[in-house]
Image (tube, each protein chain N blue to C red):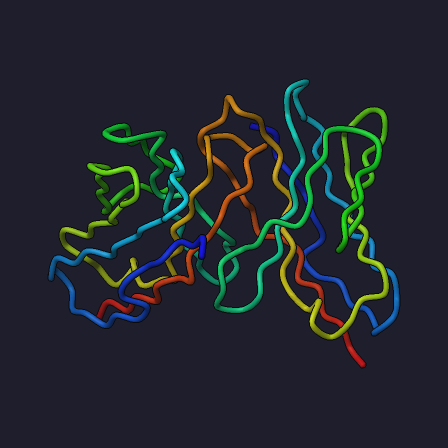
Length: 114
Length: 110
């Protein structure tokens, strides 16, 4: 089954404790991205990757890191999480970059930073 | 990137047709218009995409006037399960950053 998977689905952590949220897709897509969703603010793009070893900032990249060492994986790294990073996170992939390519979203990761 | 404006919320009843309009006055020549649907605590899901005139698929229609400064997503005979947030996106292959905005919360009542 074609899908985007994220792990963990739920995570409660404390300020400053490094964490990684994994994202994997099995559709051989070149483009992958991370979004965060907060009440009243909609979906905002954090980082995206056009292909392996190619990443770039989205609208809200502060406090996050990403890497794209393999085509299928695009982990989101929070080196020193803070309470303002409490949010619902979505990973997405599409065949290529651009709005004319349908994006496929993962199930989401709900992160709470205490 | 073309900025989009949508109503924050809309209400409807089962069986009615719902039209959600998105304004995108600064749309560029190469931009496409795409709509996504999102249920609570789930990732958005692609609904429909178009460039001009009318596009129809099994779940919705998309109407785009000649000047392309707006677009209307039409959902025929909505049911309770159509209660969701609907996002309008405008952009093309040249834009790697995609902006979803705040979307339109559609509430369908019995």
